Length: 242
Length: 50
Length: 153
Image (cartoon, rainbow over all chains, first blue to last red; front, side, top):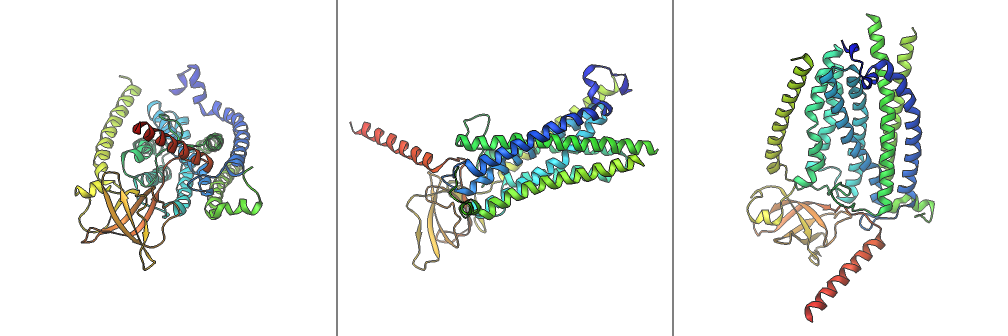
């Protein structure tokens, strides 16, 4: 039934055409990621000046903030693909959502651990149960819930649907994380960079963080496409067995 | 260049453990992720070749 | 109605329900997920009367003093409207400074002194090199001086 749709932009919604396309994109993203991350490290660790409050300890920001951004952003994209999967019953959308989850979980884990390593010297505690930290921890559970649900249900079709619903439900947590520092009294400080005000950071520090963030973005695209290619092959090989 | 010496760079103003720990955790996690995908790709291609 | 439209409608309805649920949850969270109370809230009786809770605000400038026993410190926490006296025995975090944010956990004793068992520093979201901070500070002082000069004329 899906095959009958021949509008042009659906062309890449077919795993068969998407597989080689992804293969072409991956090396470019990987090279870009390597260059930008190296440049970001150079700015962040070598040339950026010290901070007036936190001394050299603030340099954790160059990995913590990009990781935290992508922990949230990747979740939203995962939820978007999950929704596309449910609406159009598109296999490739489900596969994309499945491929995004581990990378999102990895960045959530990194954000939590680096945050902990930052909190201990600056705040005086590895962990506090404030709204920002708690909601970010819930994000990790949502990612873990997503792929355990995938693994728990044998029928791929039903697994895709069930986990897609979970991804959608959980999406509400993302704005909660983002705005938690505004809505509640938290120990975590407000956002240094936001769309509504000028960044509260020196230009070179901001530049280092942005370069790192774009590097992380390209890294994410590369690994997610690598994973979706595995996913396509795996599902294909299972079909052949029957 | 912000640093005067290698030892100063490594010490990170006394925050060495926390700063280097953070960067290590980040890049170790990314490396492990890449390694896991590579393993997965190898195992799929192996099954497909059979 | 085509199957796809029906599915779409169902999902939309489901999402709408979820959003409503989430709004309700956040509304109830708002009152419960407070990490700390400000001195004003404590004054108004919004904080628990007994047991542990956290207060937050600024360490009042010039209020930090070490008690003669050399172990305990006392300082005032202010939200600019109300002020609370805090006593703490232990190591203060690196970013603990007068005029900067602080969150202290502990309980009120009968004299109204907040005895803290943990003190956390709450820093702001500004990052800049020390020279820039010094320049900003100087500019602020200059502006304040101009303002007072203007007043006296």
